Image 1 (cartoon, rainbow, N blue to C red):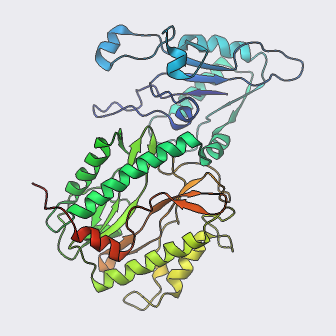
Image 2 (tube, rainbow, N blue to C red; image 1 turned 90 degrees about the horizontal axis):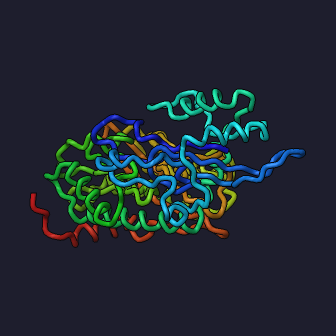
Image 3 (cartoon, rainbow, N blue to C red; image 1 turned 45 degrees about the vertical axis):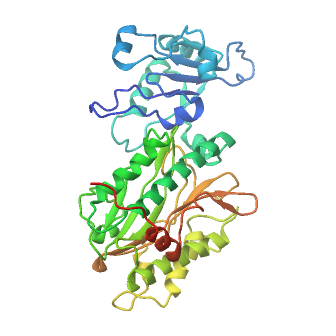
Amino acid sequence: MVLFGYTGREDSSPSYVFNQEHYFYYLTGHNEPGAAVLIIPEPPNGRSYNGPREILFLQPRDRGRERWDGPRAGPGDADLEERTGFADVMPFPQLRTELEALGKIFPNFHTLLPRAQEAGYPHRANWHAWLQQVLPQVSFRDVSGALGAMRQIKSASELELLTRVTELSIEAHLEAMRMMRPGLYEYEVAARMEFVHKRGGCEGEGYAPIVGSGFFSTVLHYNDLGRRIEDGDIIVLDVGGQYSGYTADITRTLPASGKFTPRQREIYEVVLGAQNAVLAALKPGMRMGGNDEKSLVRIAREVMEKSPVKDSQGRSLARYFIHGLGHHVGLHVHDPGPDRPLEPGMVVTIEPGIYIPEENLGVRIEDMVLITETGYKLLTGRLPRTIADIEKVMAEAKPPLDR
């Protein structure tokens, strides 16, 4: 198996901050540009291989470039094994020689094959074309499915990082609850939450912060954040930090004034009831999607269908639940992997929502859960979910921030 890290040239914007290719980072933990990793199994019958089984390839040190970009790890550094975890580190230009030798032993190579639609910089396509040139005689197979399945089951160290970023994101949401009031701009709330993340050691945001007030509470991926919050608004805050590559994903819905209106309250209670029903059924073997007895999204929809609360035309609120119930989360806010029953060690979000544009009223409640042997652990349990608890935190808010 051969995987390539990002080169650092994927984005030419001056604001670009390097963030490693996720599969490469998952296997190596190396977060510098221009690297590759080679993993060699037992050779096929009748053939032999006596070299190293794991090799990290790094670009040679460029002292002049480092004056601009900072020090980089390079082959030959004295502490490389301690810093990288790899006993064997070679110069990147040597990768071709190693591949050509292995191509005489192994008929099949695994890598990240190009996708039908590769958005942005064609990382996979470029490296696959290079591999085909170097190894025209071998067969290439896509490894993303196997790695995606591995990424769905979190290791102990991954859970430590996810717990850390979740706690920091909880603190950011609590800060938003305390500062929320009419007259603020959406971007002010987002900026405060980002500050809390940065103060705690996050390298950035897991995704573009969503702070949608009024009508924009009904826009799922709203990120313009330019509206001034008005009295009577409801605000959907979907904000999570990124820490050591791992991402949190949390949503809360708040009343601008600190008190939900009667209509906001009844919609909120339906969404909360759907989430609670899902949590009551959450355990290994259940599925996020589908429409059978193991389907969690079916449980959420049934709560909405059966609720006596309706829209202005007397119709079920389930028609306003327009997305899936949740997703895996880890190195990516929507971590990849196959659609399969839940297993212990998976971390997923549970996020039912109802969005009624004609009422300027959207409600989403999103929490992160760790699937355990017998059920689940609510990783975001410290963050208030009920109306009473949210209004209590908002009532005990600190004095308004200086603007």
